[in-house]
Image (cartoon, rainbow, N blue to C red; front, top):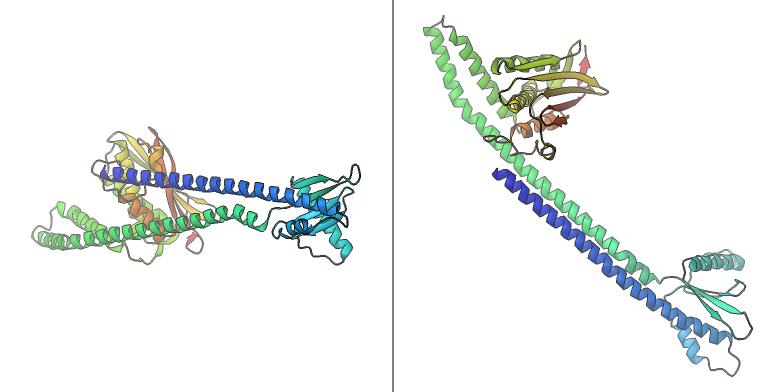
Amino acid sequence: MEYMQWTDRIRQVKIFLVVAAIIIAVASLAVSHFLTDDLARQERSRMQVWAEAMKSLSEADENTDLSLVLKVLDENNSIPVVVLDSEGTVTDCRNVSVRAHNAADRTAKLADMALRMKSAGRVIRIPLSSRRGDYIDVCYDESLMLKRIAVYPYIQLGVVMLFVVVAVMALLTSKRAEQNKVWVGLSKETAHQLGTPISSLMAWTTILRENYPDDELLPEMDKDVKRLQLIADRFSKIGSVPEPVPADLKEVLQHVVDYMNRRTSRKIDIRTEFPSGNFIVKMNASLFEWVVENLCKNAVDSMGGASGSITIRLEEAGRRVVVEVSDTGRGIKKKDIRNVFRPGFTTKKRGWGLGLSLARRIVEEYHHGRIFVKSSEIGKGTTFRIELGKEQEMRQI
């Protein structure tokens, strides 16, 4: 319960941070939009003044003082402008860079540029009084500064989001590494603590065998001691890189079935669906048995002492070999499915929440496979699926 409360608090903090980031992003884009609109209005106002200056220049005679007009025209050093007459001919341009092979090509490209400006609504038409119906179109584009201001918030948000993603990945990696160290340390310490009593039990069974060679309970005691040795060996291998060796996957699964049949109530029917032939897979049989045993024990717990069945299915799926463990238990809630492999997560009152976490570690890190909840329905049961690669690691006989 404490872990669930802690997980809920962490999730709430994450939601709060995401909402805060969205608010900051929206606010930044809104402020940028307002600034861009203000600058765009200012540039249009400047273009209107510039267009009036062009009109004055077009209608000037030898007695007109053009000093102020020329000053206004020369002050535009940032806004691209193309001027067209009433027939659509280019008469002037400023702050426009055009690559052309000759004058005709340059004029054609300027005309195309002016048409794009007009289609974007960036044109000011100034009627001329020299002749009725005569006018000039001052076509302009956004200045380089305005374009940069419009794009900058998106670049800034992209950089911030990249930083956030990298930071979150680093935190998750650090957290996962720290959890792994805890689980590995706990596993090795468990194996170490089991070593002494197991050695003592082995010695006592040897003494009992010498004194009571015909006792029928001694073989069962030997089985239990060997089982404890196997458990200690499994714990000791967590955190190391066990050497995979060829093993018959059907035999490994059958060992699990035999063990579970001896340790499970007769109300639970454990079934197998194996194809013909043997499946030889490079694996660590002891650890893989642990994974399937853990799934079977969880299935038994999910039935709560009631009658039910567990089905262990082995099949090929393309380039992979698949093991499925299905039960008829109470099922898993949809909100809990993504958390079942998280260290510390459990729905049991006395559970530690380590079994499925270690199972995923064994399947994914040691056997380079996948383990996940294939399906689950409340009141009907759950199916776990394990996928192992076949390439150079398995051959079917």
